[in-house]
Image (cartoon, rainbow, N blue to C red; front, side, top):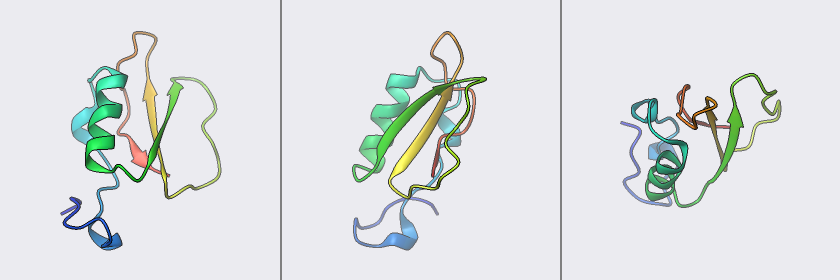
Length: 76
């Protein structure tokens, strides 16, 4: 569930990466791009306002001041 079987099958593309919480943000971004080369990654620090629009091709990574991922990265 949640893994891409084929790039064209929109129902099986991964949309969340809970396993990346605790990772350094750049390593997390590399993993997301390996899983979903069709998306771009946006970086935010805890406490900054996140985008309110939805983008099916964006994954948001929220990290602390030490660049450690603190929330599950998700598509949107």
